[in-house]
Length: 291
Image 1 (cartoon, rainbow, N blue to C red):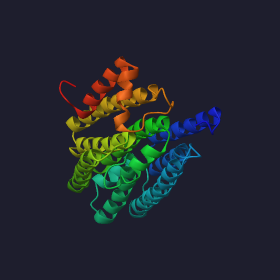
Image 2 (image 1 turned 180 degrees about the horizontal axis):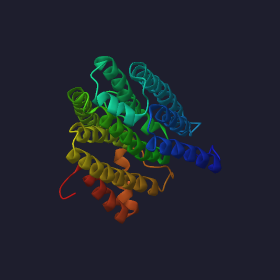
Image 3 (image 1 turned 90 degrees about the vertical axis):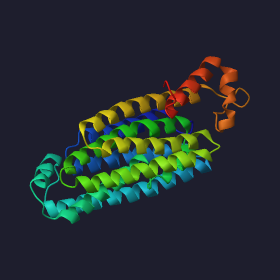
Image 4 (image 1 turned 60 degrees about the horizontal axis):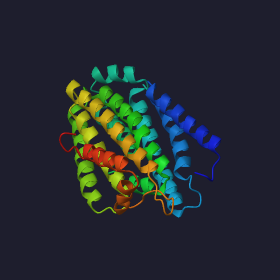
């Protein structure tokens, strides 16, 4: 981060937050697309902040290429929906689909493309390929930003899409969400076993938890949505705690941040209170009783 002036970093983060606010208050596909592009451009820059690092450059390039591909799928899906309905506003589209059975399959394809693009943004399987590399390659502070803020906003968009089409294609939508969530949980759980670096382990944890969040939404009733809100509040709190502890503790010998899982004994040696807190937070992330 030292290669960039502090005020420039703040400006980029503020632009990303502006994109997120646009997304949260968007009520049509065009403002949604503009918000996604605004926040994506800032995130691409944040991913390559460590200009002298090969890993950061590779992570940023991979994220940029796959992000551009997901944006293409999003705009293609929006184009298909608009071509066959003539409507872009969410409320009007909901009313139109609720009262019409016309253009069933072609509109469904458009919504599937939009959902695929959003699944990429949250890192759910099978669109998770970029996540471990980006988590490991970027600076730890930026990894924390990637892990917390975008998830809340993109899941809000997924909820909006679900509310538009849940009465129109409930069975098909449920199948898509369940398949993606089960794949995410399986890949997140199995992939994490073979990791030796801490941030890659957390990336696979994020993939698994994205699967659980999608599983809450796949029920498509009020109990599922309440479970989703409760889950994401707890998950964001735990992730915030984990990254706060990782950023706080540094190796006394080199001054570099903790990278490998076997470096975690440094936490307990340096600060017993933080070490104990880290254990409790990791137990909470795993869902071990009574946490």
